Length: 196
Image 1: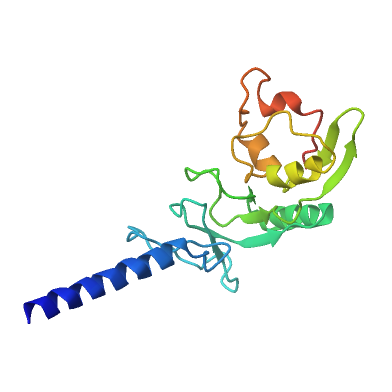
Image 2: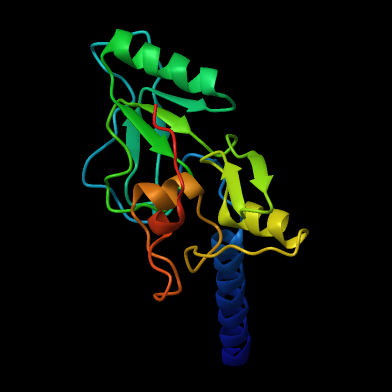
């Protein structure tokens, strides 16, 4: 009888461990939100008296520690998407926040009730000057995108972060350093960039 109880407990425990492994290794259920693993001290309200008819969104960084109520999340595909979002923000007197892979952690990535520009679809490789070894990309492109593109042409990136999952715009916005200290920072390899 005791062996059956111990065996049953072991089976249940093993099932619990397997379910936890599956849960924590599965993809997020939403692009914008992480499940809260600890009870929050403050409830996030998804309404605002200044905008009673508006349904707000919730966004988080990859740490899942900075859930923030935002007015709107705009997926950027073109310059016009950025310009239109900036115009709406100006009219409604709302701040703008910019998000790529959302690895810039510490709570500084989002503003409460902001219009968030999701830059991940603004990721085209615009041009490559093979002779001068200058590539022009949109800010949502990742280092991985560029590596794959340049590899086909037997070229490589001179300076990048240690991981290739970050966006170019995100790397520049946090003044990231490169892997090779002899060459210098990522910013030292930038010819120019446009700010709207």
